[in-house]
Structures are given as C-alpha cells and as structure tokens.
Image (cartoon, rainbow, N blue to C red; front, side, top):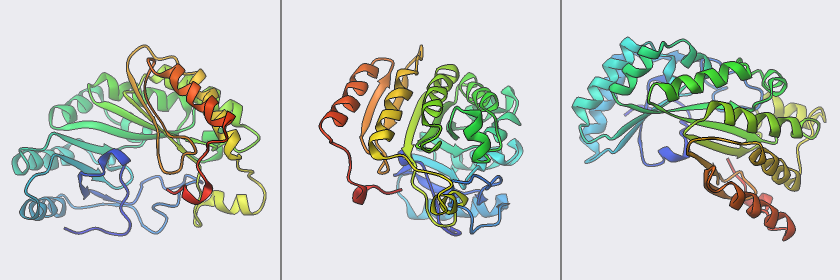
Length: 289
C-alpha cells in the first residue's frame, strides 16, 4: 500500500479501505480548505491502483467497504474507473459498497448513462461538498460551481440510483451573511433532495486563504451561539419529501444532531433551542477537524 501526503475521508468511511486513485484535488482553490495545498494534482496510473488493491488483499481478511480518494476521484473517466471497479469486484467479492469523492464539476461532466454504469459496477455513494446554498458565498470561497450547478449535480447522482452525501459548512458566510447562508442552504437541500446531508462547523487551518482573512480582520467568524442560531434557521428552511439522513455530529460542531428528515426536524430544532437556553455548547477546546 502506498499513500502520498495526508489522506482524508468522510466520517462514514472510518472503517473502509482507502485507495488513492488521484493525488490531491483538481480544483484546489476553495479559500476555506487547506487539505491539499501541499499536493500537485495528478491522476495515478491505473496499474498503480491495481497494485495497491492486490497488496491490500494480502493484508486484510475482510473488506466491507472501499473508499476511492483523494479530493475528487470522480474526475477519472469511466473507462479507467470501470477497470478499477472490476478489479475490486474480483479481488474483494465481499465488498458491499464503493464510495468516492466528486466535485459538482466532475458529476456534471458525466452523462446519466455513465453514472448508472458506475452504480451497476459498485459505486454506491458519491460525497460532494456543496458548502453553501448561497451563490454569493460560493463565489466568495471560489467554489467553482454555482448553486444551480450543485443542485443539478446532486439530482443527477440521485436519479442514477447512487446515493448523494452532501456536505455544508456552518459559519462559512461569517457575521455579515449568516442568515442568507442558512436560508439558501436550507432551500437548496429542499431542491436537491439528497440521501444524506452532513453539516460541519467552520474551522480554518494555516495555509487556507480564509485563515489570512480572519487574521487580518476581513472575515469575522460567528460565535458559538450564532452558529447554533444559524443551524436552526437552516433546519427551518429544509422541506424534503423523501427520507434524508441529517448529521451534524462532527467534532467541529457545537451541538451534536442526528436524525432523519423530515421526521426528526422538530426534535432537532428543539434540541438546538434547549442547547441555547441551557448554554450547553461544546467547549472550543474539544472542537477539531
């Protein structure tokens, strides 16, 4: 097994075998992100990926899930992805699901037929970072995709039979635009109807452009109380018609929420209200990425 640099994966892939099919992120311009700044993006040779899979097979007795990294492994064309997926099926017949990171741009470059082809060959979930439903925020963070494009990408994933897990970031609009960020994100989720939503809370590390803006006073971060108020406003504006698993239980969050929408919406709103009333928010010392 060979890994280059730091390797990141979604929380739900904690027990998955992680295989790098790309190094870094093809976009790598988001102002809040420092994960791949030390890497020059490239696509690994399929033969190297096959070698890593063979090596892992010798080491692990059972592999239930495999996750294809790095930042947007879906950038690969289907021809190469299918070679990798076919080898996974042959080498790890017990594997129940293959997950992959994809950018909105990656998805939009695929046809419906190509996404269905990926589903039929093992891709069960695509993780996509939306970050915000506000076009202003998306422009400010240099996301490289608009609200409409992200909604379309998620709808394409779901229409293909693959589950979409979409991540958003509380506090990403700072003190000036938090209400718009919350409302637009809530209505975006309502439009895209994803299978999963993950809500993180903004934490910035050195190396990210936004870190310098915070230090210079150009960007003012939300207080813990305002983050919780923003989360409540976001939830109030989500109106989905099918089950959506909602998670805001990342180590960065001030209040841990777990529920299914729309069923648990009122319960989670009550949980946020109670946390504010009783000052029951996670101490900054225990927050982490």
